[in-house]
Amino acid sequence: MNIPKNKINDFNKSLAIILAQLAYHISPDIVRHIQERNYTDRAFFEELFGNNINIENYLFDGSDCVFPGVRRWDPKKGEKRKYNKSYKAIIDDNGFPRHIWCYLLYGKSSGWKNFKEFELAHIFAHKEVETGVEKNYFENFDDKVFPFAQFTSASNVVLLPKGTVRPTDNSTVIKSIFYKRHIDLYGEGTINGRSGFKFNNVPDWYSELIWNDPIKPDNWKQNIDDLLDYRKQRIVDILKKADIVPDGIILPKSMSKETRKPSKKREKDNTKYLLNGQPVGDNNGKCALVRAVVRMYVEQNPDITTRELKEIFPDELNGTKFGVINTYNDAKRINEIELSPRYSIKKPIDLNNDEKIAVCTQWHPGNITKFIKRAKKLGFDIIEQNEM
Image (cartoon, rainbow, N blue to C red):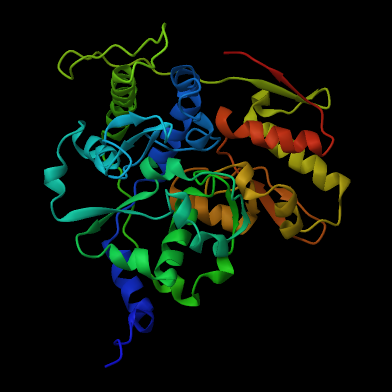
């Protein structure tokens, strides 16, 4: 008797309709907060890791990796939750990814038993041997970049009911709809070494899918800040047992929730900018700089279209789902959906072909450096004036 036919591809759309309504993603606002903290905390981990862990595999620009230095455990390669010299990493099973959801909802590392009806699905591969499918969905795919950060990437660990995860592993069509959902929510900045998502490779019926709203508890900011302090202590403790923690490492003071004082608001980065020797307006901040560069480029290239402009200033420079620019109508619609000014629609830029664009407002120290680097390659002279 022949092996029965695998009929999963006959039911991809039906499965996708069901899975979209079962999957829970973490809010993009939470992911952006982690990205900003990673930018701030990079110096700490760089000093902590030294030559023992390659920080570039985890805290690249735009990374939302929650536990840098942690990779998936292979039972043949050593003990879990310990530093492995051959891996140059801490190896673990799914304990660390689960901490993300536990902290988000309960403010502590324990509590996974409350998720007994769920399991975690990693959307993008976190092992180098499993990235083959993804190569078909990105214009730019760097084979030399390791995907280890995706193991504890907050945007990459999706909550699904037990028993439903396998279709995301075995069907390329199902994978593609989760890829697109990820890009729509978070952009490409969280994915290391991959850019230029091929939207045309996603089924036409994707627009029919109804997704759950991303999870964003009222107390998420305090819980996530606690998680990001906890990770430092946890990683340091593990590396201490391997006797590879350098002298002078200073950890955040640990306080119980009962005695914790309200944390001081982080100082805003008030860096000002000059473009070609002139102020850029609107307090000379990041968004004003981006808008001034784009406007000047349009003036220098009066026949340029929105599509061509997006090629000059690709979305990955921003690292969020909003990109650098958008058409005015789309930007206005997104602002209304988000209930927040994600684009500067009050100061649009007119193109000669009757098109109108708006510039994204979502800029911070972690992504503005990419834009500045691009602008300088185009011949713009940008000077930073730090005012912290």
